[in-house]
Amino acid sequence: MTESRDEHVAAPTNRRAAEERARLEALTRVEVALRNLRYGRVVVTVQDGRPVLVEVVEQEKIA
Image (tube, rainbow, N blue to C red; front, side, top):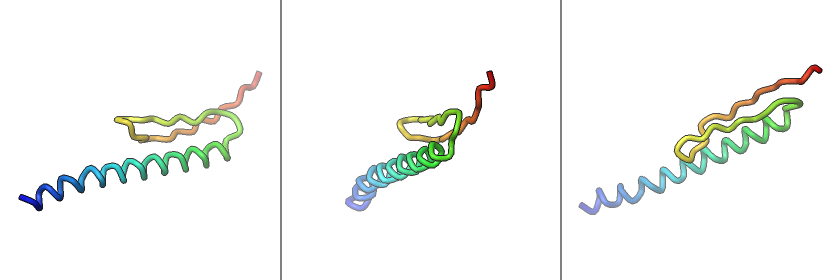
C-alpha cells in the first residue's frame, strides 16, 4: 500500500513539472515570435491553465 501512495504523491509533481515546461516553452515561442514579427499579432491559446498553442498572425494595413 505504501508503493501506491508514493506513486500517487509523485504524479502531481510530474504534472506540475510538465505544466512548468509547457509554460517555459510557450514563453520562448512568444519571445521568438515577437522578435521576428513586424506587423501583426501573437496569440497564446490556453486550455485548463496550460498554454497549448502559440499562433503568429502577420498582417500589414495597406491604407
